[in-house]
Image 1 (cartoon, rainbow, N blue to C red):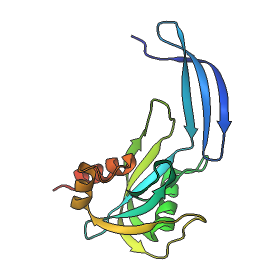
Image 2: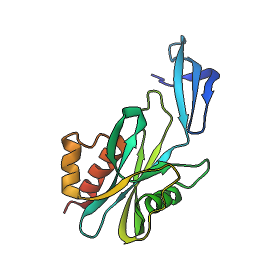
Image 3: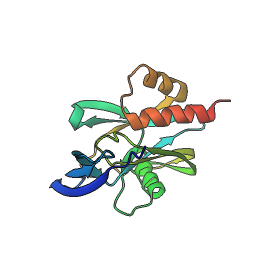
Image 4: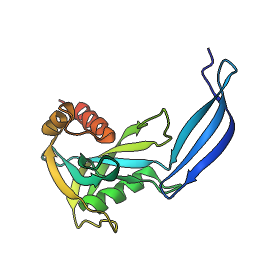
Length: 178
């Protein structure tokens, strides 16, 4: 069975700095039509920075949509056409002051494919060096080092709620198990 849907018409409801929203009319595989609401986003990058001591670098920051301070790995949004790894290196340096000698792709994450077109590129960073943070204007966060095993427990207990952080922590655990 062909599962592909064909876009017939697109109508933008909002075009902003971070996201655009649109409503598409589509033809379904059975020939009927339906509407699809889509959030467009340029995508993002997250970095699971692992210290030589087996700790991950985390940031705590207030996330307005949830009205909560969340524990996350360093991350940021891609600029149009920007290389994901270069974005990740920049975000790691800005948020934590760290740089890495070695990076490994952990793949891509589709945070909510039912309505959002965002793709998050995930990386493992190792052999870290430390310098000064360079936070963006209006960015407020604290940096923490958490042992990888404890971070896994925080994911499993539900204390880490962020999807990209959950996925990256568990991937790093699987890749580093002996």
